[in-house]
Length: 514
Image (cartoon, rainbow, N blue to C red):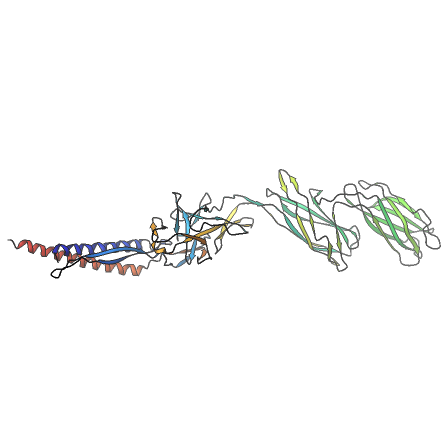
């Protein structure tokens, strides 16, 4: 064994321990770095061929290894964009150079341009979200990825398309009873539009529903003005003079407005007087006389006068009789208004229609879409009027915050309470994570020994789940690192003694010449 070989071996040992101290120093310096994976120095011997008479000293070689697949502990935060992976996989981030990298550092913050960047300045990447199917990913590459931007949509508005109505229409109210309620819908620009709903009782078990915006019906129903009316039934001939019986019906004006007609029958000494009123306005009268058999002997028709949009009506009186039984009279008219006719069964349940559709309206450059409104929640029972309604859609609203689910779906929550899934975070992995190439900024790239990058989603195919409001801590153990530092220091000193001894022996050899 040569003295020079002894000195070289000592230097090799000192260099190896210096490398070990370097990794220990990095580990300690990054013990608080989110997602940092510790490095360790591994040693291997270097042996040179030796002869029977002498020994050739070799030395020691070092290799730095990274514990990338060793998961760190979690710490929890109040920020929904702080992300950690519980299990295998890496976030995909984009650097300032436009290249894509892998990282476990999920301390992302929303930037003024809406992107999510971690502390090292890398942007989080993903795929646009689809509610019908998972985005198609390139299994072994980063093609198709886009930066996740939580404010790209700015103000968000969702126009109304459908809704539902429920409640009770009081069955004991008289024909002509009207009650109104309102619901809010949203047009294509997020403006709120108030729709007025008017229920009018037109007959037993029959109502009309008119939907109006700004006083104009939007049901799309064609209006047919009433032109005829018919009354029928029995008038009690034993009633005292001056007794009045009233029945009602609904007639429709040329504008589709409902007019409540009252038919007032008043007993006289000679028979009966019929007075037809539109509201409180009398529009026609007729003296009714009957023979001994109760048949009508006076005129069998009456023509009313027009009143506003309600035109003159020809009232058919031929259905009237007079007898000793209880008075029971009814009236009806032709025509229809702009509302839908609602029919109820004997149990008070709606029989038809089960839904209605309004017509689309162009309002101030925006469009209020035609709405499909479900009516199955309506009833007609002996209780007070009640009404409830729900129309979908949301008005214009700004972004409030971001929500991220465990499977990586990024939802943008607006201040009006609307939540819209917009992106799905992509994840990546390799066959040998510990052989990835580490770069500055706590990111990794594929190496020849790591295997190819395989893409996927959180919670599927072996990938871990994403924890929102959590961060993965460094996997560095300070106690272990300090122990390694002391060992490296002692070993470095011991190797320096080998070098020093070899130097002293060489000096003794040189001095033999003296």
